[in-house]
Image (cartoon, chains in turn orange, green):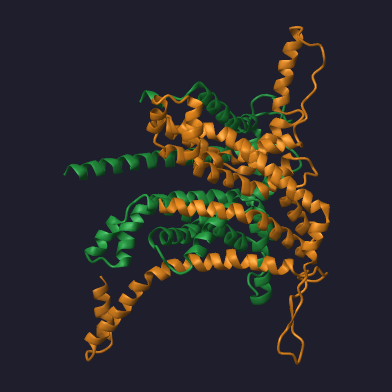
Length: 335
Length: 279
């Protein structure tokens, strides 16, 4: 195919040097072929560099600037004065100092970390047995159950969180059903107190339900991937040698599934820390979560430098878990 | 195979877990057919909220805009993501590989508020220095969505490729095929199912994104999740239930079709392998 095109161009170039130009074109082609790896890498590399890496540099830069009332609303780090060769640099750590001094930020960081930790543990508590059960089902059942885990994951996250608003409301589905049960109980003479609806909506409980509900598939899938590969003959061997099921679980299953546990936990923990939508819809109106603080700092207070420094501080908190995740991810690559 | 039975404990957790995952979805569907304006009281069967939804121009416009953004960004995400996944799975050592794989995995776990803020600040700086993009809207949302969803596509492609050993590609190279030809005739057919699932994932993630779009959108470019959010913030409303039911229906049909197709392909491949082995 390429020989034809070479021939055409060769003829076009005149009859004196067809051979030579053909050789030249082939060389160009060969060079392209040998460079193709670089071409494959260059496009995504460049894109991620510009739209993923550079933005962080900009956040860092703005977090070191001062807020002013202007467009854009922050000072320049470099100032060029006439007659001087080097610009003077204006860097301020005021924004970070502000974060340290104001309790609001500390409390929201700690609260976010607490929320994310508890949600991760609860997800693990529900997700581990589920993943284990799926991994040990028959092949057909496995496929069906996996599909059922993935399906909610493909439907709108926002709409699924919204569904909980209808369920948990003071006059929502849950309270309606409880009221019916309560009335039956009353008719049977079990109680004579009037029904008191549960106040779950706009509390921390609702927030936990929302987070666990949204992130449970992220916990189940990596755990399943890990447990599915596990050789269950090991368990049989341990059992045959006289270990109790609990001992087998603690000494064989659990240690072997550690990579899955870590990957799943990080996939829940990291995004949950910066979560914005769930606390805004289900949580207390004044829940202190760092994602919300950042959002409000930027959009309500319009203080870009402080918002940027909140983002940088959040990244500093999350960089260690992220690197652990990356480490496990690249380990999985090798295997 | 007797050992393969799940205990009662495991089965009850499975039942509880799936109930937990599916009660809200069934609730949304059931109450979209509720004639009462009060979302929590059952007032009889009715499809009037679907009619109301079709007359809500704001929602329809936003849905069209979101679909357009999702289709474009998913296509580019598959393009870039496939190349990235290919590089990660098949090129062992190249300069900057660590940075590259870091840039692929970081968006998967990066909190959305940070991604959104950083991209917005990038767009503002770019506008200041080179005059592009002029204002924010569809194009900036699309770029943002390409950036985070290409990472997911790359991971899917990489997973698919690392499951297939390189012998086919090596054989083709040994027989004298040029790298492009190997890529086109051998590698791409191997990853094409993964490219399709990557496209679908990128498409739904773009359709689903609220936080990043809120950061990088401009006036007049409200995506569907942004419109839903502003409505839902004020409380539950029945036409949103109708919208949710439509989306759930479409997704269910799509996912089941994809699963059946993949299942068949998998079987076909197994059969082919058997045939090849017996010959």
